[in-house]
Structures are given as C-alpha cells and as structure tokens.
Image (cartoon, rainbow, N blue to C red; front, side):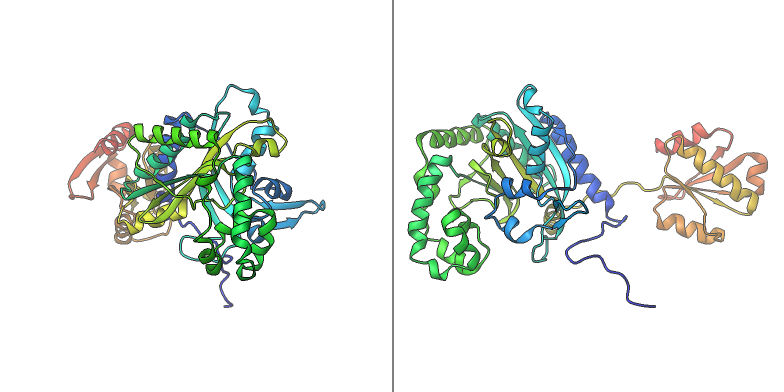
Length: 419
C-alpha cells in the first residue's frame, strides 16, 4: 500500500463529526442577519483577476503575494477569490442593484483562498461570513455594522471583547497623510523590506500593514492618520463614536489600524477577543465607482469562521451537540430485517431520525451500535413481534420500556418526538 493521499497544504477537511459546529455557527449568523434586515448573496468561487487588482489594490500583500491566479483554457486570467467584498460589489453593479431602494444589505458565507504561511487559525482555504451594506454615507450605518459584528460574537458567548476603531479619511486627507509618511519613511528607506520599498512611492500607508518585523519596528514612530483628517472626516468619526456610545459599545481609538486592503476609506474597525482579531472591516466609499459603478458609499466586515471556532474552543465554550438518532430498529432474521428497513423509512417520513442494520450484525452488536450513535430509543423486531404487530420500545437513557403497536406509526413517532 503506497502513501495515503493528503489534502493540499493549508486546507482542512470538515469531517461529519464536526459538521454540527459549522451548522450551529452558520444558523446563528443567518438568524442574526435576518434581524438586521440583511439578505444573502452568493458569488462565484473565482473571478477575473483584474477585479481584485483594481478592487483590493495592487500594493496589498493579498494581490502581491497571496492570490491563487491561473489562466483558463480561453486564455483569461482567473483568480480564486481571496475575499468576499470585491465580488459582492461586482454583483451589485452587474445586476444594477444600485437602482433599488437603498441601503442594500447583503451577507454571505464563502470559501476564500490566500497563499499564506500556514499556522494555527490561518489556512490557505478558509471560510468567511461577510456583511456588505451599500448606499448610505450616514455614520449611523457604520455604527450598525459594528453593532452587528459585536452581536455576532456575543451570540456565541464571547465576553472579553474589545473594539478598536480608526478613520482612514477621504482621498484628500490621505494625500496629505501619504506625504507625511513618505517624509517619515525616507530616512529609513534602506532598512525597509523589498515589498515596502516598492510601496514607498505608490502607497506608503501599506508599509504600516507589513508583516515583516523590521518594517513593523520602523512603523511604530510613524505619523498617525487622525492628525490629518479633514473637518468632514473628523465630524463623521465623532458621529460614529456617538452612535456607538448610545448603544453602550465600548471602543478604543487605534490610529494604527489600516486594514490589509486598499479600498477602505473613513471608518475601519476590528473586534478582538483577548487581543486576537476575529473580525474586521470598514467603509469603502470609492470602490463601487472604481469598478465602473455609480458613485455610491458602502461599508462591511469579514469574520473568519475557523478563527471563531478556535476562539470558542480556547474559551471553553462548547457548541451543543444535536440528537443524531431518535430510534434504532434492530432485527433478528431476514424477514425482520426487511420489515425494520420498511419501518425505519416510514418513521423518517414522520420526522424521526431512524437507523437499522446494514452490516449483518448480531443483535448484541446492533445494540452496541445503537449505543455508539447515541440513539435515544431502540426496538428489536423478530418473528413474534411481526406476528403480533406489538413490540417493546426501550428508552436508552433510563432503560424504561413501552409497548408499541407497529400498525400505529404516528403514535410511535409522537411518543419519541415528545419525550
């Protein structure tokens, strides 16, 4: 026997034994989205490479180092999506959703792909819950998005949350700020990594997001964006703070949040648990226009599901296991096995989770299996039970037995479902 096939590096199987955790998280987030009037969108797993170059930004780590890009059979450059915002904006423009009543609120669950160094909580194929709100420039919508992000994490029992916010200003603020950054980094230029040297002229703010330690050290004394905000951007930030305060959401101003994607303007934020960022986002008021749509503001966030699962585990928060099996019908002999198969399927039609033997096991082995799958009830059918249409149903938690009528499947279903 040769070497076993392995999943590609940076990917992970979701096994049936863990599926309930993902379902639990997704169900809660769908319900929360409904409460906020947010509706689901699904976009393709791959897009034109140009969408991410223009949308995410050519000077970002994502575009420069991390994208899975290939040429398809028609010679087109295609990229597996590294994030969900740019595809959502493309769909918004392509389907003329800007002509609808605004704001447009949408959410998605998506796989995303980035060629990164694999470490705990950071995979090359990962899963994201994302929110995108289009059409409103009001600070109240910024606060609503942050409120939704905080609620999303509190829904799972996380308590030690901290919210950091910043403003990246508008293009006018950014122009002045970029000049100040260039002035600052000029004296340290030779010590910057090669990637940051290439960013120096085109987008010096990206240097603040570099993952190289020497660049992070140099960046510690850099000017901060908050000192360069124009009056309008400053007023916007103050209003966002007011809305958060009225909601009782405690936050900290963190002038070093720049986020890893170029499309952000004005409000950016991160939600952390014990210092680990689980969720982040912000405004991207120019992106729709840059992708050839109308001039229209937008804001959103992304929440990594693998990271959320890790945090829940580290905090000792258990996701409740569902009931996998209500009733196991064991059988003795071929005729009983045929009838067990029939009854199992008829009871499934009545809403029960039912199983019977598919492995030609002995009765003892069948009951062991019923225990292993945590079946709540068991029935054993033999010739006597089939002749009389009467059988004993056993509740596994306490061993109590009930006589049942095999001609009355509705009654059996009700007994199991209501106990």
